[in-house]
Structure formats: C-alpha cells, structure tokens
Length: 210
Ligand code: URA
Ligand code: SF4
Image 1 (spheres, rainbow, N blue to C red):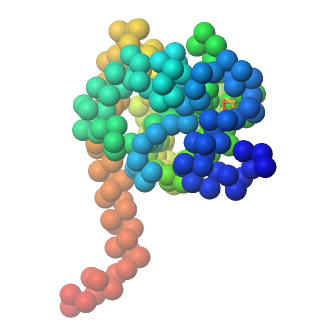
Image 2 (tube, rainbow, N blue to C red):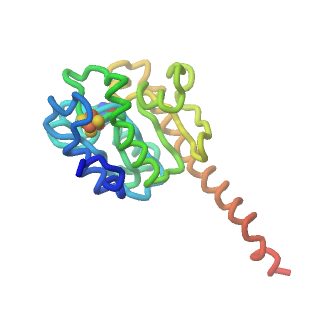
Image 3 (cartoon, protein in one colour):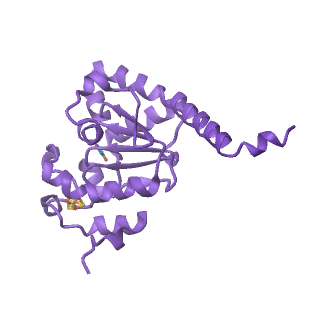
C-alpha cells in the first residue's frame, strides 16, 4: 500500500510516518531526515515555516538551528513556549543548499500540511516567510502585510517575516519582534469571540438567572 494513501494520514503520527518515507518529490533524494513537524496536537497556534535547513535535516526536527533559537526567543516574548504550539514547514524535506522550494515540490507536499492543519485545527496560523504566506495571500508582498491578522476560513492568519531573514537583516528584526508581540492580544481576542459565541449558542444559562 502506498504510504501516502489518504487513510494513512489519519492522525499526526501516521502523517509523520508517511512523510519520513515519502518519495513524492525530488527533495527525497537529497534529504537525510524528513522533518514532519512537531508540537501540541491541539495547539491553538500553528507556525508554518519554509522548509528544513541543514540542522533540521540532520535532526529531523523543525527550527532547531539558529533561526529556531531566534524563534524560541520571539515566542518567549509573546508569552508562548514551543510546547504550546505546533511547528511545521511548507516542504518537509530540505531543499539542497537551502534553495527556494519549487512550485511542484510545494504542491506535492501540501497534502501533509493540509491534513496537519485540518487535524490540529488551530485558531491562529502564523506564516513565517514568503512561501507559507503565499498559501493564504497569493501575490501579496510581505513588506506590506506582515503582522496584519486576517480571518480566513474561520481562523486568523498572521503573516510574518521569516526568522532567518530577520536574523540577517537588522531592519526586519524590529518588525518581527513587534509582530510577535501582537500575539497575546490576538489570542485574547479569539478567546473573547469564542466565549461570546458560546454564550449566544446557549442563552439558557443567562435566562436561568431570572
Ligand atoms: N527554516 C524554516 O523555514 N524551517 C525550519 O524548520 C528551519 C529553518
Ligand atoms: Fe515528500 Fe514533501 Fe519530502 Fe517532497 S518534500 S519528498 S513531498 S515529504
């Protein structure tokens, strides 16, 4: 049975198993370890990067190199830890020499990302860099829309610069720090909206007060 048959993408563990043996695109030829992604299965926040770098390819884990260290700092400033979130990438295998992922590679790998999003069902998706941004905002310029949350399909999508880009360009560093600092407020708003919605759905609780 092909490892990518839909029934094999039933839960996050079977997705990870399918990714590890996936040969759906050329990137399988040069990878050392595929990087399915990791984190809390019912995380409210999901972060989507571009693709594994050298360290990630060595370890099979997302964001464990320098940009990962920076990402941890950014999350800490937002009062969030790695244990609170789920982190994955647009492509699960490292593009050679860290080149950009190609459209056919992104397309081939999207079945895994789609299924992860469906299963985790986060309230907020933070896209890190151009390639995950393009999934929700095709043709948009990151310099124009970074940090602006938009509701798409019932969740908030927040496009942000890629931590690696911000590490190497000091002008972007302040921007990504400011954008991450907005996360607690966004989460509080999501929480408030959800509470209001559930009150609307069960007004009986309120009526019983009289
Ligand atoms: N950059 C990414 O986009 N993803 C990783 O996992 C690491 C670096
Ligand atoms: Fe499969 Fe995605 Fe890796 Fe390509 S990048 S081989 S589609 S897991």
